[in-house]
Length: 134
Length: 201
Image 1: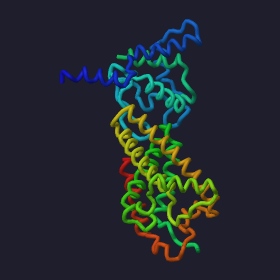
Image 2: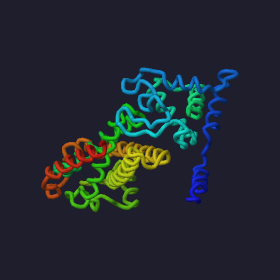
Image 3: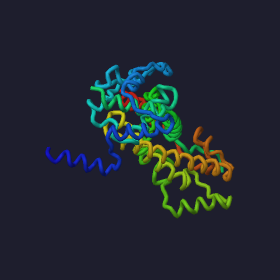
Image 4: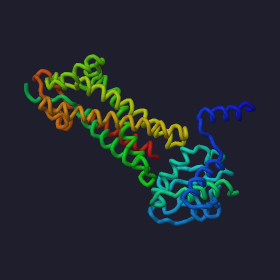
């Protein structure tokens, strides 16, 4: 078992894009700052966004429709009933570690739940909340 | 030359189920709202393709792989004959169509299996990427296949889409298949229904 962590690191480096949630949050924050001078990510705004009822989609009116009110808990797909691993980094260390995956799922879920693309600021706030929530 | 029965019912039914399944799966690929529709559409493609493999050995004459899987030289000479507007006529699948079948069956099975694994939470992000890449490759083959069917139909003066619906093509009477194999078509429907039910649950 002692060989497992180095093995995981090796695999992560082979994948070539393993990052920390802080690095990924920073990418979005930097992008947001170019649109809005002095932008700083806020976990509190991220939480409000997570709980907001967008009501664009009957089956999934909010993030919480699938991810539950507590991102530390496992979620359940509102349509298929399949389990979804927790969004919070504290409960699921794999979250927000692959920039391509993060960007892909923001793209899909924002379009379907929020009804539009999320702004870099919203993404930075969301990543901040999910990284900090305990 | 007259109109003779060439395509059996499992071939035709399987073809159009695959068309519907792939189209629906492609359109619902980015949606969580239609996730179940996507899974059932993909299960249909997987079920049809997996049925078609044994059918390529025990099916009627023109459904068998030995009847239509040809080497690259034959594919090139067929493509050249189309370009020269002097097409070789094949009672069954032409060599280009034969490769479309092999590729679409292979890609349909791989894409479906990858999708099934993702739905059951095996694999992770890399498998999602693979699933999408395979589906995009499949769409590319579909586009080439459709272009080939349209140009082939025009050049041959024979509606190949209609042939895939009613099973009839031009040929000598002795080249016809004797039965449309309706029982096997029923089996195919049952297999598709079972696969959809099992995979979606």
